[in-house]
Image 1 (spheres, rainbow, N blue to C red):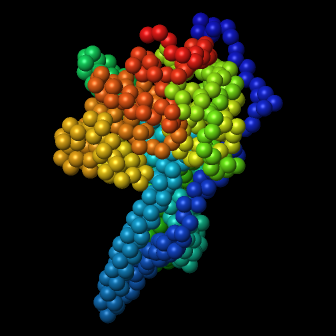
Image 2: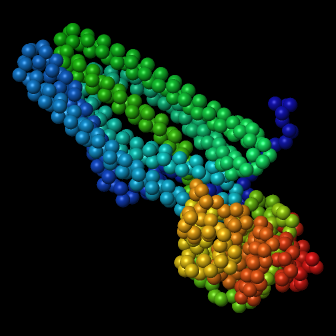
Image 3: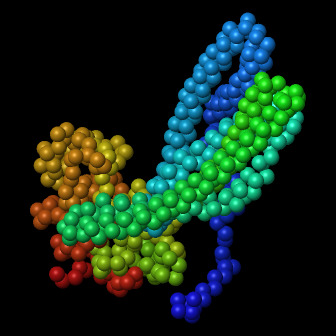
Length: 583
């Protein structure tokens, strides 16, 4: 310890402003039950499933009764005339069980699909509604693994609502019928219960700890694999494939270590359950045989009673197994609540519309940080006159893109104001603010949709207008290359790829088709050749005076027409010039 200890101790103490997260009070079983909201509108299917499962349990009790009649009446007393009736009863019993089981399977499948659809859609909608600050500080793989948690939560909720009650129902009837045959056997069937409860109390915390660790490692693996596939070109170019594989191997190895621990827990649990079951069954069979020898039971009653004992013990094991599954569900629920209880972006409904811009955009005393006490931007003040062309300069990491995100209402400042004339944007509906301040980042994402849909993004823009703009931007060669022109599917797994420059032109087209009075462009020509840069510059000069432009760039051609230049250095505004720098 002394060789490893640094000699420093971190003492964490909440300040007066500390507020515990809302989710802290919802952990555990109460948090799991919050997912009942997804069953809204599915109560009839749920009732049918529960009823069908209970009927199946009741039908299973017919076998012991028929077995007793077969042994005592047909085989022992030679009442052959009962045999056809017994065979017919067995046939119909099997038929009904098969029909009920098939119907239950179909209902269960329907319920699972509808729940999966609703839960996944709700989670996706929540992810989209979270502030950008959350997405910029979370691993994509970690967010994706929560979709797997949804499946586990659905399975556990179905177990709690359907199979747990029906198992208890079957246990109650099996036990009741067993009492009719022999009270001593009914009582002795619970002989192993104390051992199982003690084992369950020991096992439960281990299951939850392993499940939580395994899910976290799964998120790390997903992020590692996504990063490897994203950067495959670079890895091959630098012959770093083995390095990437080695990193992924370590992540996957750690994850499989946790899986192996889970398998060991499952194996020991299975061994313990089987030993308890077998020893209990042997003991009860021995005791039942003594009752037969003492004429307290018939052979048929022993066969029926032993079958009911197996049913009872099986029901007890099912309850214990469901409790074990609930532990996995609790971990999955806790992980999901970590995301679903993060506050969504504020609606800001005080002002639902913005008036026309008369004077300009004012930024006053702006502060922003991702981590407290480590500011990205501090004390930022500047003014963007209406119709002006402003260039934002700064070295890499100085906070230019973050500042653009704040001005466009994509991020929320820690303090300070951004004014639309004299109206604070923090009081304006987010959708309305973003409709009027469009920010196009340097990295242009492509969605698995047609080229037209990728440009319009749900906006109702006439196709002819889009084609005219693409023609002016020199996009004809791209359209000719695609088999269905502007209606060809790009992005995702589509075989039709766009170059980095073509993607950037697509992003510019998205901005130019917007009617927003304020456009913020981040390095709009960074990957374009000179001819295309001149084309974009002509558009910007045409928009100058009509729209307010904030351009992040280091390209001399885009700096030259600027009305003013703002420079950032290490998160602070170093100067603001009314005239451009000499190039």
